[in-house]
Image 1 (tube, rainbow, N blue to C red):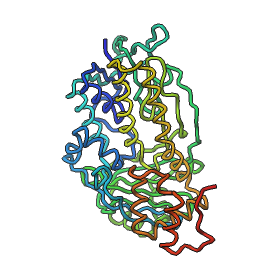
Image 2 (cartoon, rainbow, N blue to C red; image 1 turned 45 degrees about the vertical axis):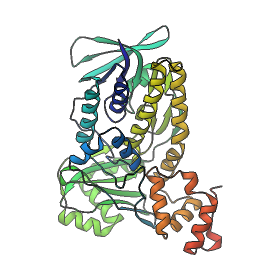
Image 3 (cartoon, rainbow, N blue to C red; image 1 turned 180 degrees about the vertical axis):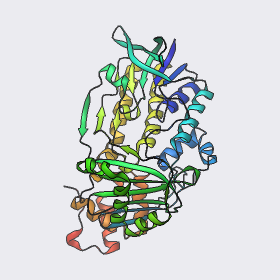
Length: 412
């Protein structure tokens, strides 16, 4: 009998298991994958997420993998160019974009070392209920016989197509339709650092260095172009780079060598899903998902896995009823993630910015100090309410000489 059964061993599940096991709880983690293995991902970890890895004693292992640090960010959006980096956030002065074969293995190994039992290659087919509460899981290894595992609590950390969410009947209560699709692959021969460029024709390119001397190159286009794009991915991929930043497109053709197949992310809608119930909870993309544009998937998985671990521990230790504690986790997750969710949904449409955001970001791009604040907000060190505070915006507009008729102070 386990205290907690976690389904899904990647960026939300293994940290949750690690933190619970370190507190003395008996934890089982199952995943249909075996590790190391790849998965479709943005790779990007914000400073806030890296601070979690450091606190868990895992950041040094990530750095030792050879993934290069990123200390300068270049972002452009429909004519607004912002280049710089945030001040240290929780002592973290850089960001990283590791391969998931590297990152997930570090997390799984750490959870196992902490005392969690890890079963790889196990596919969950159902959730066991007793007296109206989740009480275990049922599944199998490959084509083997069906097996059951019992636990006091079941957590779905099994991604956007969560089996656990489906089996417990977790309903969606906020859905924002997805706007884009993503193609990416890994290229050698380039040294572009981090680039996040959005053109005027509703398409975006992104580049960042990852493990093994490779650069991840991606693009986003609106969904209505998906069928036409997939008819000739190679040439269409190059064409988007040519159109968004012609000099990068030229260098890509001259020096870049694609080392792996293209991956495609045709993401589902942005959503919040009910993430707690009698004996169960959801964490990571299983309960809350947004477009990959802002790269917050991995970091949010870390942050809210830690939040859930804290609340599960309260319940398991008898400090308060466990369902009450987990309900508070879900409420706090929604409250704390709201601004990231809304900003991501807005900017990922690849459409012209609303006038207020255009005014603020255009001014911020002209101020080195406010550029740092912008990246501080993106990296999780400054709350959006602080960044967009009218008093701060007044000073920004005055600093950069924004015409008075362009000085918008509120989104309304």
